[in-house]
Image (cartoon, rainbow, N blue to C red; front, side, top):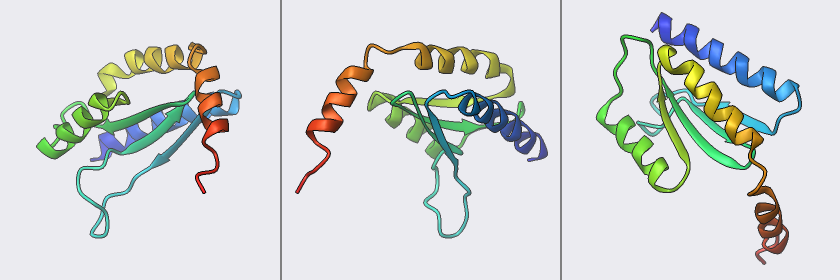
Length: 120
């Protein structure tokens, strides 16, 4: 567990740095517990309008069947679901930077928000 916590701090620190640089990033850390539904990924993120779920694991960690199922559901809904190990952190950074650099979807998302911001 200590390895996963250390890795979590590294990932959150990197995302916070990007946010402080002005990149469009919002994320929250989910803490499991008796009142929390099982299988929810560790980080829920919105990066440049794209939904991410990230399940963090230490190098020797293994996701539960439920965690794997939830990540597959996110991917099938056209979000980005990732089970992230320290060995894949550089690849994760490449994915996030690619999403930040993609602006072709921004105008369409902005138009949808403007058209549907009031559902009364």
